[in-house]
Amino acid sequence: MENITDKLNKLINDTAQFRDELIVQAKLGQYETQEELIELESRFNKLKETCKKLMMVTGDSAESLRVAAELGIHAQSLDELHSALELSAEEIKRGFDRARALL
Image 1 (cartoon, helix red, strand yellow):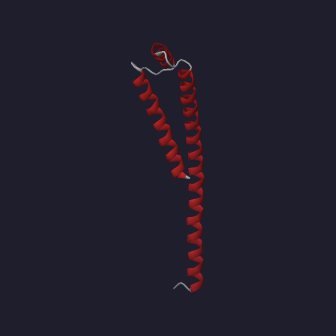
Image 2 (cartoon, rainbow, N blue to C red; image 1 turned 120 degrees about the horizontal axis):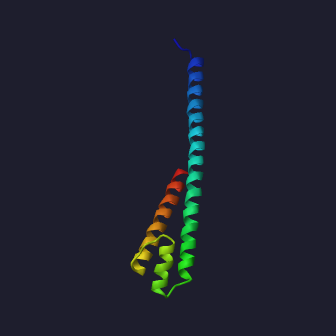
Image 3 (tube, helix red, strand yellow; image 1 turned 180 degrees about the vertical axis):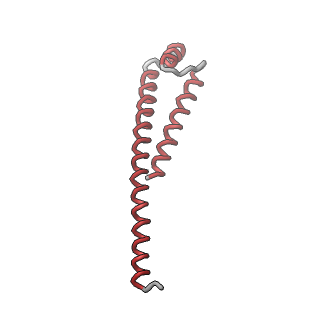
């Protein structure tokens, strides 16, 4: 039969184990979040550079589509180009939201 000292020691040990497991999970989560943020930052910078290059040829639809194609975006119209860039930005935002939720 357990006495009160044994019960309290078990309570402390169980709680400490729970805490230690949570600390490990938090550190792993931080690492995963950092990796995701690095990837998202890279994607964001690529999107930003793409937009800057396209802004330099704004007003010339054919030139905008040509530049977009050179950047790997295959669109038939400026509307398609804009939609593709919006989709990319939304995916990046969702990634940032996932990272925020992990913090």
